[in-house]
Length: 176
Length: 176
DNA sequence: CTTGGAATGTCAACAAGGCTGACGTAATGT
DNA sequence: ACATTACGTCAGCCTTGTTGACATTCCAAG
Image (cartoon, rainbow over all chains, first blue to last red; front, side, top):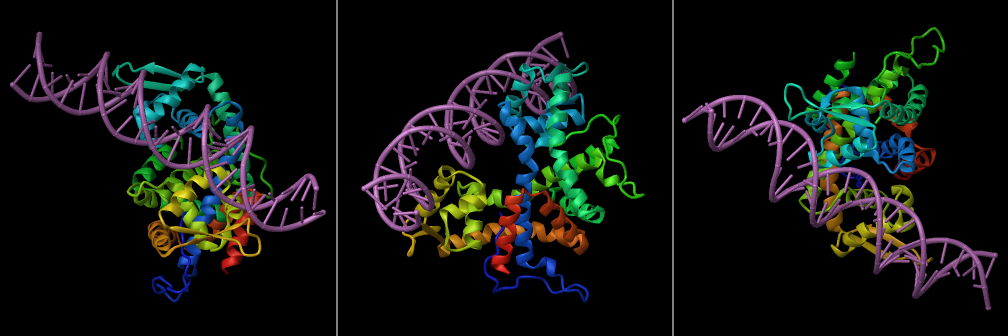
C-alpha cells in the first residue's frame, strides 16, 4: 500500500503556480493509494466469483482476455503483456488448452512459436467474465461521469511503467 | 480482465440525453479494465522491489500500512479492512511481531483483543515503502493534473464494493 | 554444411499467500 | 452457568508466482 502517518512534515513541493496543489499532499496521496487498493478488489471481485465455480483463477481470466484481444498472438508476446515468467503462464495455458478453451497452433514460418486462439467455448467464458467485470465498470463510469472517466484514464496511464504503457497503447491502437 | 473482442454487437445502452456516451462503449470499458491492470502493476512495483530484498511480500506492506494509519487497531479490525482470513493475516503478523516491526498489546478494557502498533523500526520500513509508492503517485498526479485526479478518485470510489467504500471513507474521516 | 548459440516452449520443484476446517483459551455477555 | 466473541494455531489445500534443467527449432558464422 502507501503510507503517510505523521501529518507533521508536509513533504510537499511548493505550489507551482498560485495553486494550492492540495492533491499532492502526502495525505492525499495516501488516500489515493488506499482507493487503488479497495477499488482493485472491487474490480476483480465479480469475475473472481465466476472463476471460483470453475476452479480457475485470475490468471486464467487474464490469459483469456489478452488472447481474445489479440488472436494468434504468441506465447512470448503474451508473456510480455502479462509480465510473468513463461513457466507461470505455461501452467495456466496448459489447463486452458486441455479444457478446450484455447487452441495452440505451431507457427508456420517459425515452428518454435505457438499461436494462440480462443475456441468458441473459450470465447464464451471470456465474454461471461468480461461482462461481469464491465457491468461494475459501467456503473462506476456512469456514476462518476465522462470528465471523471477521462481523468481516471489519464492518471492510470501516468501510473504505468513505461514498458507497460507502450504495451497498453499498442493494444489500444491494434483495436482502434 | 475484461474483454470485448467482437466489434459487431455494440452492446451499449441508448444515449441517455442527446449525448453519445462514448465512454460507456464496450471498447472503452475494455480499455479501462486494461488500464486498471497495467496501472496496478505500476502501483505495486516500487514497494515490491524493496520488499523482495527483505523476504517480505505485499501482504506485509498492507499490514504495516493500515496499522500505521490506525495505530492501536485490533486484529479483527484489520481483518475487515484487508479482507483476508485471520489465518492468513496471522502468518504475516507473526513474522512482523517476531522481527520487531509490530507490537501487539493486550487490550485494557477487553483483554481478548490485541491492539497493534508499529515500533520505530516498523514505522521506518512503512515510511520507506510508502515513500517509494507515493513518489510514483505524485508523478502521475502531477502529470495528469488536479481535475484528472478528482475524476480518478471518483471513479475508484464508485468501483468499490459498498462494504469497502465504507471502510475507505471511515479511514479517511479518522485521519481528517 | 555444420555447428554453436539464441529463441521458444515444457517439465519439475519450491515459496508466498490466499483458503477451509478444527480446536484451544481466555474474556465477555446473557 | 453457558453461549459467544476474539484471538491464536495446526494441518492441509489451491493458485500463481519463482528458478533450474532441458528439448526443439532456427539462424548465422565458420
